[in-house]
Amino acid sequence: MLQKILENIGLSDKESKIYLAAIESGGAPAAQLAKKAGINRVTTYDTLEKLMQKGFITKQKRKGAF
Image 1 (cartoon, rainbow, N blue to C red):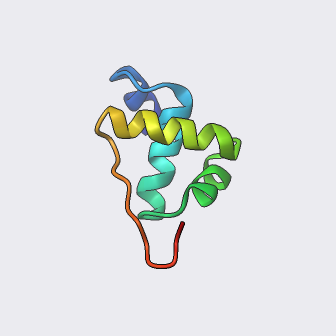
Image 2: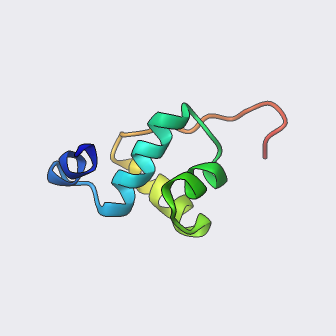
């Protein structure tokens, strides 16, 4: 249901799946979001970039992370 609402406001299927995975995970790395959303990791990075441009998510650097 939430996914359909997100799609109705302009997110793609992949964007809505990754956004919901990010909300549920509370700031997990992209690889974990990809697994949770069931989307290819490389595609997840591209989709996360689009979500950042749209203002839905922000990027955080973590200590010890690349």
